[in-house]
Image (cartoon, rainbow, N blue to C red; front, side, top):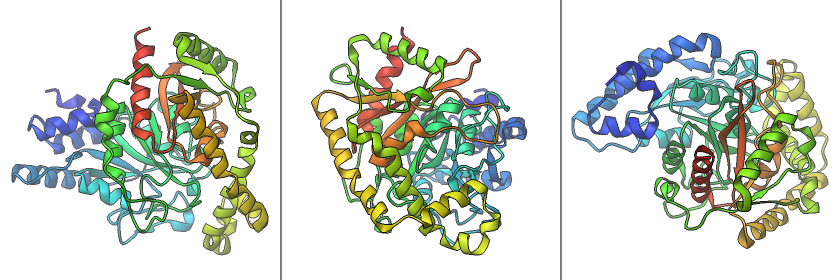
Length: 446
């Protein structure tokens, strides 16, 4: 076993090798830390990383296994955590000077679930300011002159650079799907309320989702299976039976999937290369894809999303507005000002639109389609670091709380990743991963 290449293992492969005693968690974590030392000066994916503490966790995990104690599915596997999730043993600073040095007293629910599954919390990954638009320090690992996307920039870049096999992010608009597309990894936004958000920065109860990053569909399934659950401190979670993500994602679909190609009203924002790439993909799928137009009511969804997001952000960041608005970015101040000026009527009217919109999509899936096929972004990662890119191709699916997955299937002439987004019906998360596996295999063999 070449210990210098352990960082390239998938989480599923590494977990199996640790369980079988082929490698140790300490060896895996050492390999990931070596990769960080090699690349992070350029990529800058980490907001907080204590290598000695990471090794301590790995040694404890190895000792636990050698004592014959039960091992969790992620035993000894390092995971990066976006710096908006509380960690009792590391700072959580929200990408803002207003919370510099903040150290919570307890873990976020998702972090606690990872520890319960045996994971090693390697460190905290960079977020944009309060998971909004003002960029952090992270660069795109494919070309440091391009944005990695946001707001989960550090998580996407760390996984893409093979510094860590798994990472947590979040999405309130396009903060998981877009950076995954720009960095060339899998990014998964599950059904709203599927993964508890207690202890995660709250921007918008209606729109906030936990996001997952990995390099393989098996790893997305493995990570999701550990995180789904009910938490009474998150009022949008519900008790339910365990979802066998790993098993379902690995199955062959009973029939070849049928895709609905949706351009959305923002298709004109896509660049020529993206239009050509999707035309080729649609041609490749042949009779397994049909282009459909959105129903008229969906065209207003972007306005509804903005109203809900900015109203709820303004309420949730009241302390920050009162104590340090002059230290917020110009873009965030503008969002909060607009949110504070919205009327209750405008906010409630936008909220009321979500359920009918969701019902219309549910009917679409029940009639014919397994997944919606649509761009993850308007193109490849833009050059420059002043912007994290356009989230427009994620907005509608976030508003509806539907599961979405960015799959790195395409590439530009300049060798930058071009993401394909798949969207499924609410509570169809595992089946969406199965469909994505089928699509990836179809592209790979053509």
